[in-house]
Length: 125
Image (tube, rainbow, N blue to C red; front, side, top):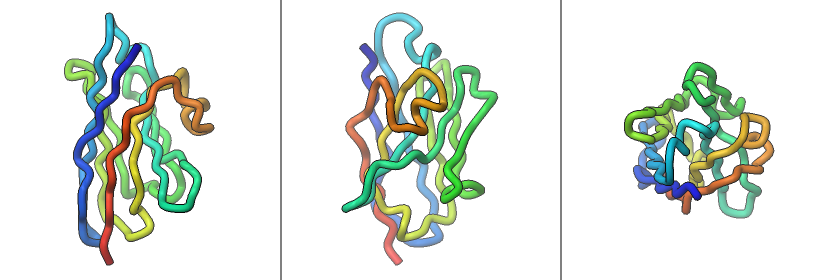
């Protein structure tokens, strides 16, 4: 069992930046076993993929809607994954979920094995 706890959400003005964190905990080397990612869900919309990072941190994937504005990273020593978001837009407003899964494909499809509780990001215009 892996627990994922997000933090860093809040209110930010358009054009601003925000860094989300997701701390993972669980037995053994669970963090290093999973591809980690972020998905988001805006009001009235389905949950969508944002970004993912592989086990080693050497490969990342981004949704077209955030590419160039968002960077995902992971710190194995801290068992934490980050999402640095820049040039935020009102359409980035959503609940952001941290997710752990078996490969990027599963995260892109929204089929994560573990989910965090979500953190709200609101971008004001």
